[in-house]
Image (cartoon, rainbow, N blue to C red; front, side, top):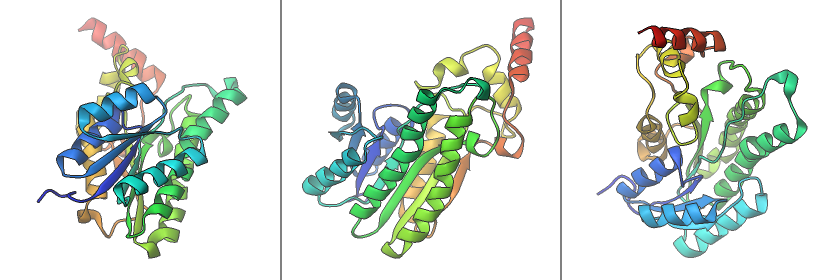
Length: 261
């Protein structure tokens, strides 16, 4: 018997990166999986490829997330696991912040995450597990990431509150905070000169993170093996949180070293 046989899972942002990897893992473990995303064409394509179901959803709209929960309940009868992998990165110096960029970031990464927890938890009648994909930048400072990291840090604390409030219902709420890992969203950053080398230099385990590292942590928190874990921020970073995130000077120095090799 697979670990998630009979379970119903909802993955927001399930058509790429960590989300798509999580969909595949959950399907392999026997779960019925729903992909939710704003990009309908891409979402349907991923659902077809991975043997999942699809429901359109804009993570910034509370009513869309409520409709998502209602659609899953109507067709699948229950929600046991919900993973929010929706998001994007935007680098901007504090001195150059613009209202539109800040407000969009907060809508996707903070308020959308709260609405997702709310509506998924409210729909879990027999308990369940909710996991938000967070970021190491919410724990360590990273130049240019104030809106992104600030929103992620807010979700970390809101998760603790949600875990306390929904605990009596048997709903667990946790965060998996990822270091920089190669996905379609981050590929351009990682492949820039010096970036990979600078990150590995600040990682005690001495390698770059992989998508499977994050997916494995999400799967564990979703499974019964983590049935007594809630309100936690699980850092999946190879130990970088024990040191620091690289700065621009580190990237430049690493790029120069690569050119000299």
